[in-house]
Image 1: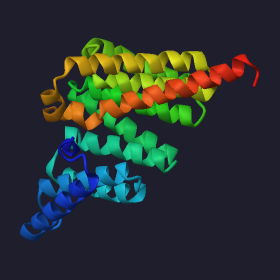
Image 2 (image 1 turned 180 degrees about the vertical axis):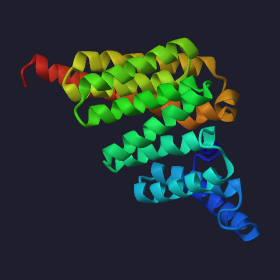
Image 3 (image 1 turned 90 degrees about the vertical axis):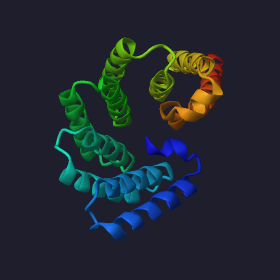
Length: 239
């Protein structure tokens, strides 16, 4: 959420490292919530740069500090668990990934207002289930996410682009290229609607739009759709 201001991750990293030094100088090493924010943001940047062990260490530090200042079922605690789930997934530590995803969902449900976040974690759990070969379970989670998004999101929201891309990738992995192409196409449509509904000012100022980089996601959907049509061509011609 904090990274929307910094498309350049190197500048973002410098900013949060400087902020961290200032806060640590003025407080104890874990004596202020803003120190946790710095670690959390540095962990998010490390994740984007694919340094997953560094990301893990920073977000775990953020979680430890936040537990000093916030109750167990606080939203900021849930964000740490959600991000740790993603980190452990990339590290192929499957049990740990599921543990943190489930902790995040538990807190979101306790808060009782974060249905969109629950839907997002269902998508992540679906990706993880697909990764370990539990295809039907994966699609169960994707369908749960769809149900939540249908109720709480309009059709012009970046989460639809991400969801359809994810479902398309799952079908692609199964070799079901027709359904993969259909979902990549839906991702493109959702992204086009989103772009039409947002002014350039909205895209710049609204972190939820900017942070998710929906324009890049649409490009990925186009590339995925093109690759899928190529696979369909090969299958059709028995090549």
